[in-house]
Amino acid sequence: MLPCCTLLRAGLALFAAAWLAACGSGATGIYPFPVFLPRTIELAVPEGTQVSGQPGVFSLSWSHGQEPFSVVWVFNGGTTEMTQSTAGVERLSEASVTFDNPDAEEQTFSGSVNVTDERGNVLREDFSFSVAPAV
Image (cartoon, rainbow, N blue to C red; front, side, top):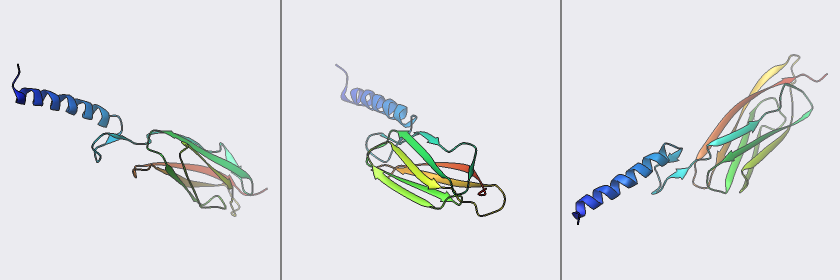
């Protein structure tokens, strides 16, 4: 029979190994058990140069995280709406916009999308897109 402290050390070693394996795959250590962030993200930005006044759709899907989710799209110019927010349990979000470029030349604009899960974990993705003036 093994002494009690030997069994305790073996149990702690197994727990530590499992914890480190989980933390190496996107978990955080603020909860008693590993929490997996919404870490796999696929962002679809309209390809090519868009034309001012025309509609477009940005879409996002992700894996992991604890639902419900809050998704905030922020556009730093280039669209008529600058912020769109959604909430729900689906791991998919779309932002429908109308492109806007009042200048005489094509411009590149930036934006970002934040996904926040129920536990407050945040995943952010930045993007850019080009908008030409209306014809």
